[in-house]
Image (cartoon, rainbow, N blue to C red; front, top):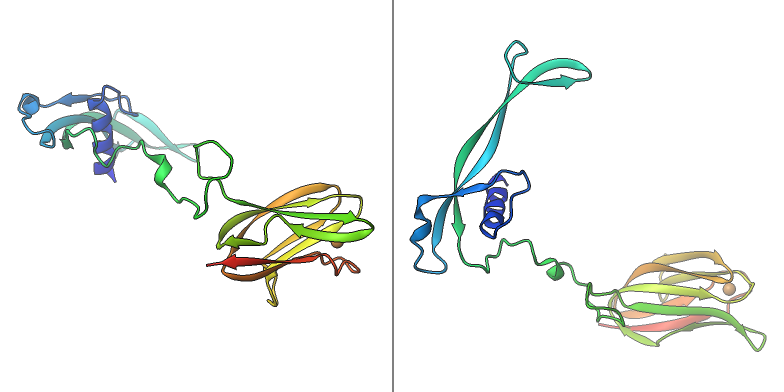
Length: 211
Ligand SMILES: [Cu+2]
């Protein structure tokens, strides 16, 4: 851990920045001898080494629950660090876009983070009939934002589960005139989306989830 941090800090210092601890790295004597681009180069990094000494000796006071326990004495030491001089070192912390991408496609957003695909569920009344509709009839398996839109003054719930399953994977609370969302991991198979309010049995729709 310390070695990695030192390496990172030294790499940043090479790029012209100062490290987070405010201790600039001093380049070693072998800086002029870099023929190959990927050659290892020896640099030094100044780090702060602290240790605790008894109260009587000089140093910064360390308190524990208000009582002076020890004093901290620090000094700066030079630590040799090996730094690879290639600009494309794998330890650069500048690639946050390659972590844990959702297995879906990006929706109509910008190119920042891969957005979670959305599945819209509408609950409404049409021609005097209660209705529940899905935005699509079939989706590939994956993690989805299920967005429920309850339209009208009647409260509806939303129960999401694999068809025939005894336990709901997601349960939306009673809601009228509004919308909410939950993240649901949809596995391959047929899923049932329905309202559990008594008398609303017609509010059900099936979704085919392909592998
Ligand atoms: Cu309902």
